[in-house]
Image 1: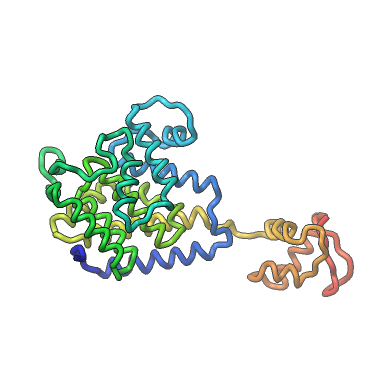
Image 2 (image 1 turned 120 degrees about the vertical axis):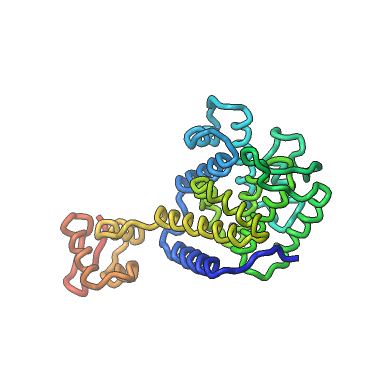
Length: 319
């Protein structure tokens, strides 16, 4: 059965914006993230997801743990970071449509933290906020059947994968299939589904943005619980994905090119070979003939280039 939700105009608009942002990122000349940016985003992802669950280690401490350095902190919190690093490192190896892999990922994420890591819960649970019961999860005996149905929904669903990923995230939190670690597993599996939708999501720390909007995250879960469908949570999650893409696009956006930067790129291309203005224009297709002439004149005047010949017959070479 398909979990209950409706596709609102907000959802359609968010998906449209997300797809435009992905297309824009794909169009950047330096579309592959630099190692430093990748590392930074991994730290933000792990810190954000664990901080939502109450882990008190800061960004610098999480970075130190990832780098193998010793820090002062609670043993359990350090273990949470180490486990999360291991899980996110293996992200590409998990099959998002496999219950077995979901349990395997939970075993990695919760190793040495709970005795039931990698197993469905065996007890009935409720989620308490303050002194009130915020959510009564389905009975433990129903968990295997419900999770198999949910995985089946992912396999067979014809709806947009951005929507089905949000639905899975919400339904996992609703079912609460594990004794502990449900929140971090919901976000982790959602990241896996996003990665399978588009590989660029390997580098995008959606979890960090959710941490910044933690109250809205829990409010969206509660609103969807009360409504009996995932629509509000889908809208919230898609907005976080869009914002994460917007931030990533800003980090990835190449600096505006100048004559100096174009000449540096041309040096890498031509090295010690002769070339003419036409070759230079072929390398930078968006500039005009006049701009190319000014670039080359600047290169000659700064002794970056030497030239021979005149006008259209001029031949250049990097010094």
